[in-house]
Length: 327
Length: 259
Image (cartoon, rainbow over all chains, first blue to last red; front, side):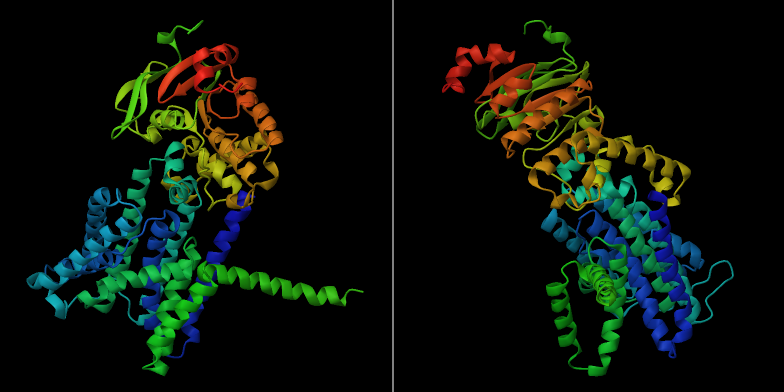
């Protein structure tokens, strides 16, 4: 049973990858590609946040800060200090991992709302630094002149290349998250979510696991951050504000808390939706809000649950005509 | 302490005291358990029985006293370290992992016995596959042992109450404990279920697991226990065989008065 399951999970991911691979050929407009690149970055962010929130049950309202910290670090190192891009990216990720490890210790002693408040505070502090350390970050008007991504002589020549790069990273991180989740480590995380006391009583070092998943989750945000910086070549504090953190949480919740597929679906849905609603300008915010409310009312388990229900419904539909046909 | 020399006992506590502000939950409590024994802990509500479990498992820091297992000092050890020493518990108010299946609950119980790390999981190594297969077999065995083999794939939260109690025991057995602490395992069970539970607990003891059991159901306690420890207002008022405890005037006065 176990090896079979293994194959189905890989198959699902493979089909998704195939779909992503052919998608650019079906899209007429280059602009759609840029939307999907942002969707891919958001998917990386929500995958990490899903590990933390959906699996381990720890809320973070400061995840955009990790995203921004990595983006700014790599941007400043490569633009101001002329570091090679891969070195800047590695440094950006390393710094985020270090910062996350540092703040994990005091923060994860907090629970529930207090943990949310703690991470919110962290996010606000980082946001203020982006705004106020003008000499370093360019302040509120942003930081320009970040070099385009290039690794070992290769650089994405078009948006299509960037699209493939971002989604390759997203799929790799998806696979990693999936393998981690479906192991004793993932079970330990879900146990912490359900009952920290019971998890500890069975020998789970809850503090260590919470720290590890917090740092890992920040690491996912950092990968998205450095890819973002060298794709857009410009960063400004607005992209990493409290609002951005809330947006990420919304994506995870809308997708379905305990599901990696849900996290990706939530990221894609909430990236594409505002673009689709451009057509009905002025009313877009209203429709956006109404859609969120409806989703939460009728699909409390998120898009993942919605897909599951739809699948069951289709199966039931297919069965009925056959039964009727039978004498 | 009739035949056991308390200083040499396998698992023991001495002078355990626990206070919450001005309230004394435990006062100078001592206990001693021999390997393979089933010791019940009884006492009126608020006597400190669950507090004693919480102190043993490191959920509450004790104010004074020592807890020793096989000569090793467990006093003040954090909960997950206590589990590493082979002391595993169940909970009076069920702490089932409702977000998992029945099987996954028991697999989580085996947390300490999975011999692979994050890298094995990430790369799906052969060791990962082998260990997962072994853990799964053991989990199925534990579920068969308590009689839940037919509901492996069900969400644990959907099980009826009595089955959730059994699942907690199976999950604890997954950890292959040397000492199993059962906190009111019969609470909320009907007469028939309680009887079956008594048989199950005895079979656990027969496997060589030492059991400490907090319980209110007197017929269960007197029927299956090797020894009984009686607490009242956080103090030990009697300890001995079920028969001896039932005769003890202090116990009769405090607790079994009506019998």
